[in-house]
Amino acid sequence: MPLLEAAGIQKIFGKLTALDGAALTVGENEFHGLIGPNGSGKSTLMKCIAGAEVPTQGKVSFINTDITAFTPTERARAGMSLKFQITSVLPTLTLYDNILLALQAQSSLFDLVFSRTRGALHDQVMTMLTQFRLADRAFDAAAALSHGQQQWLEIAMALAGKPKLLLLDEPTGGMSLEERRVTGELLQPIKKHCSLVIVEHDLDFIRDICDRLTVLDQGKVLASGTVSEIQANKSVQEIYLRRA
Amino acid sequence: MPKSMSVVREAIAGDEADDAMVERVAAGQAKEQVKAGRKVLPIVEGVVLVAALLAPLVLQDYLTVFATRVIILALFALSFDLVWGYAGIMSFGQALFFGSAGYGVALLARDLDITNIFLVLPAGTLIGLTFALLLGGFLLLGRHPSSVIFVSLGTLTGSYAADRLARGWYYLGGQNGIPSIAPMSLGGYEFTEGPAFYYLVLGILVVVYLLCRFLVRSQFGLALAGLRENEQRIAFFGYKAQHLKAIIFAIGGAIAGLAGSLYAFHEGFVWPNMVGVVVSTQVVLYVLFGGSGTLIGAVIGTVIVEGVSFWLSDNYRDIWPIILGLLLLLVILFRPLGLISFVLGERERVGSFGARPKGTEKETEKEKRNAAP
Image 1 (tube, each protein chain N blue to C red):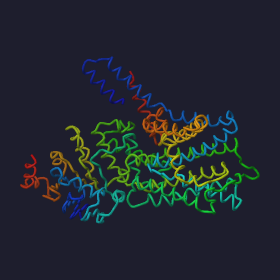
Image 2: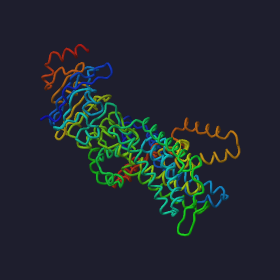
Image 3: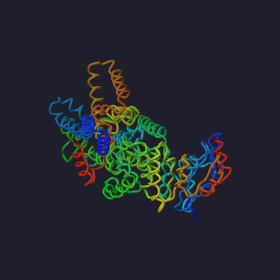
Image 4: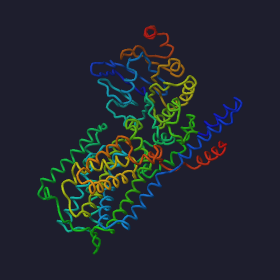
């Protein structure tokens, strides 16, 4: 059984059909790239999977459970995590508090009120920060970070709850080449325990990191397969040439 | 900071050191650190507390009575501040909990002769809590987050409906309310207007304030800070955002209930306005004026709004509401974070949620020393 299976997803906004029977299947410990021209429905499909949008039609299954009607909170608790396209770290809080906020999301009210999470999760907070090369900034406000570092912090926050599936919407948007390279490095180790769906415009980045790709065009799946299969696919080449 | 400084230093060293510039950068950063490290909030809190403790000693008797009323309203303002300033719930019906508790204890005193402080204050608190649970459960605990408009109109309607109900219900005294409530008692002692009542409510305010402070500085408060800034993000982490809101709403209701029961006994009567829209709006103004999202801001806002209207109504009998309205508008337009933002930086307003863990502190101290020129 695949980890995530979205089938026949349709999403209609008024007169606009953003998704028209799109599908996505992701196995365990698989890095899956979701690509396609602008307006092909990548972000909308991500949102339907994450629960930020409710699909007009279709079904999303996650670890053998139909989660189509789950709220974002329920999805998070089932082991799904999302990094938004727009960075949404909490700028006035320190990096430490940002990570702790993500880590303690499922703690009991008692633990929260009596701040028992703060001591208990300290090592985990520092581990996450170290892993994402932010440990020396732990007590700076998140607003003081560079754009790339904020993206890393956000990925770290999304990973804090030890999800089974992480949805990354344009993780390298606005990053320098060097930062992109580092992002790729930072993501590699999570493969051991987590699958990934990445929406990204940087095709080199996608090619380097992903195992499989799904190409969307006008709300439909144009092709799906391994990276080399997709690279050899004539119709995929066409839509990217057309765009160029 | 220290790291970026060393980077600057290396870069400059590479380019055949311009020492003056290193020093300028270092001095600028040191100043920034001092500013960040300075704690204004405890000083403000201390000043307010000392002033409140001394007030009855310097004020004339009738002013002490006025000051008691203000302290009770400040307690009420705290409840709205928790709900709006910390959980981002726009409650336009906070008076519902304040007033219903007032009516509740008035009925206890009138019909059952219960005035014992250890019975009436918990009863009032419980009434506020219950009403807030009912209304909050209905407005906040949907499967999906409720919109701000829905919640504000819902609370407003609740307050308005309670006002109409109180006006029309003979048992509650109709338009006139319930007059001449017996004083609150403890054994043989009766709390009447004056310094004893003043210090009682001040004591209660301080205790509630400290409890609120504990709550908003806990990790629960951290979750609330996240909720305020980005509710959707918090939900995607797996927080039950609606539950957090409902809990705060209920706590707010309980505090408003406590304030309402004190108010009823202090004034000696309750009337329909107390549950209505006017008082609900008044408390919004206190908190916006003083600075929502800081507990002390709510207290200061209440004291200043009430103090200024008292003074204005004495000196400008006819036009004082217009002057007050303009003042409030000016503050809300030019200082949306309230008067407290004159002395409090953004960083301190949001605050910290626990001491820095051991180990990390020392390291940075050392770094700071190394980095200092």
